Image 1 (cartoon, helix red, strand yellow):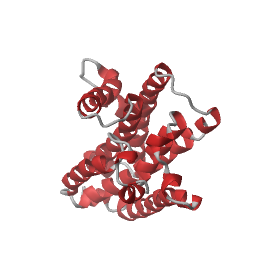
Image 2: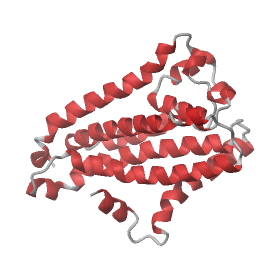
Image 3: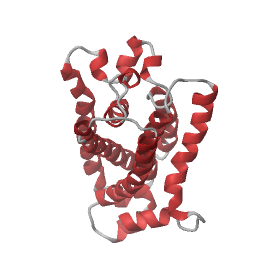
Length: 249
């Protein structure tokens, strides 16, 4: 299902799989010209590109998963199989795009001669795993919710627009007043993006990780705890409603 989903996504397009690389690069180019070159936000191109790639994966997984169950209604009615496989396949397909996009980010880092600690780099796969768990959890919740409430897809689109600007992607947290920045940094997506920037690129004056705002090191566990809490709640919600999918779709 992962391979089929990945192939169908670009079926009929001229550039095919290249769109998985061109789409985030095109968005990066627009945001870079507007916010970095014209508005002088004060963020490096590599920082901006990494933030866009990570956020794009979260958006791609959740948006594609909202209708995943409903779009496969005939398959659900005819075949008895674990329903979570449908959502998992969508998330895994998007993970292929993420890996390709991170290769592009790595090229940018190499050309900008950014310096990073190789020991810190080992932390990056754990952050990608946290991103995958968070995105997959939201995908489980949204796909099950959409089966019963079809209007929710529009609410989610508005939420993503608001969350994009509330997450430090096109601006550094150093530009946000500290009393607001410390609360923004508690968001799991903000924490993942900030920590990935720190371990891959590392200028602390721009990343401002959680330890900059809070004296206690234990506060770093809050976004991770929120991720696990969302995962548990989404898994229970999906499992409870999965038995009714064949009737509701």
